[in-house]
Amino acid sequence: MSLFKYTLLLAAACLSLATNAADFISNGIAYSLTGHGREVMVDENIVSGLSAYSGVCIIPPVVNYDGHNYQVTSIAPAAFYNSKVTEVVMPNSITSIGEEAFLGCDQLANVTLSLNITEVPRECFLGTGLVNIAIPEGVVKVAYGAFQDCFSLHTVMLPSSLQRIEAYAFNGCHNLYEIYCAAATPPKAMGWGAFDGVGQVDVVVSDYETMDAYLDDKAWGYNEHFTLFPNEDISLLVTAQGEAYNHDWQRVALGNNLAYKVYDENNELVALTAADFFYLPALDHDACYTVVPTTMMGDSDPVLVMVDRLTGIDPFINDAFPAEPQPIIVAHWGTIYIYGETYGKLVSVWDMSGRLYYERVSSDSHVIDLPRNRVYVVRVGNFVKKIFI
Image (tube, rainbow, N blue to C red):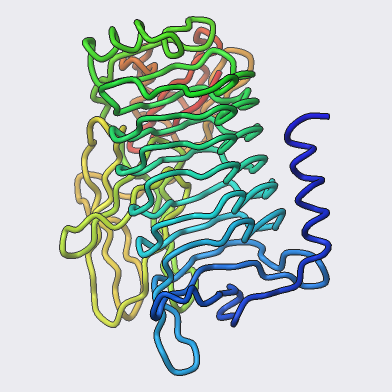
């Protein structure tokens, strides 16, 4: 029996005996008092033996209970186990995540982690549907089995602070195509099978000197798993517009490109995310946010997003990059197909080493043949998308 199946069966046996032990529920999220002043942790929300969590879960930094405000500082072990949650946004008030917090959440495709965690814990995202993940600066360890059997995982962004990747961390991620690692010293693969079952992964590091250090490392220099590239500046854009999500949040569609830094109106970093969407709070005043595409080793041109207190998010206000209809970009068997209102727009394609493969003005429909088993960045006018062939 595989480690993943055994873990799920064991967790299911424990879950069948559990009751909802949370102290209170607010806006569908269960919380338990931690005993450390006015602090709470996100806990299980069990109804009839099953997790009640589903869809988008935006965890607030502060929650009110019994007339008092409590800071949300952690997520309990197995809090979202086997739930139907699809997106999770964590506040920066969270400093720790429990083991197996999202184990078995096979519909979970997007996560924005707190900027103040120091590790991705044991089996935290095992068996989830994550597509891209950006791990923030300050994280020093990706623990045992943290992303094991994430079959949809394509892109991983690793911070300069990362020191250790433990056994089974990315085991079975056979659709993992690229890793961006900002660490100057290769993070130690601390156990067997950390990358077992992955295919040929493009690893982008900061420069040629760093690339040589990775090539000399026993794990990262293993050419049956990894092909190493130095980071190159590629100018990418945030291409979609914002929309009202509900009365508390406004949603910005970021697209499936790289990672994104989000700065608030005071120019303070409030998020690093590789999710398709990010959620901005609906404030009692107008606010201007800045979204910066990044490889975590270099940033691209910023885009400004205005949140109007009365009407929600306005279109992106960068005059140089006006909103435009988005093309449809798909790949199949070594060919990229581009559809939509693309006539007369410049089409450019780079590989992950920054090499320009293709550049030409588009016709109404466009077909490009390229070498297979690689990740490419495709730009059509102001729209940019990563794609694997």
